[in-house]
Image (tube, rainbow, N blue to C red; front, side):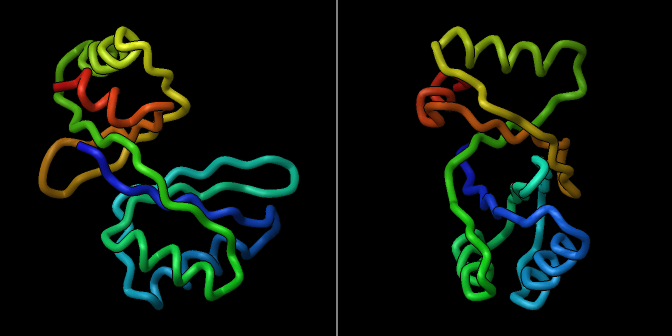
Length: 127
């Protein structure tokens, strides 16, 4: 399933993550998945939320740079090799996986969030 992900660029200093999460909380944004990556000067917080466009606007209003893009959310089955099969289908379609991270789910199995260079083509390969 294609979902919207919000990527927020954060200065790499103490308190920045706390500030960003407070902005989302104050905007009544529910976070469903999160991944953090960093460099020496900045970090990227990638989130799956219930209201991605509102999250982007809240962050913009607070002075943060963010983008919204499409990623694939794949429900993981509790089977040995399941994720390997998902990755094989995507790569066999000639689609590059740029990064991925897991997102918990209270209603079903965990989801793997997958960012590719062609989300629609990858989604089609998984059907």
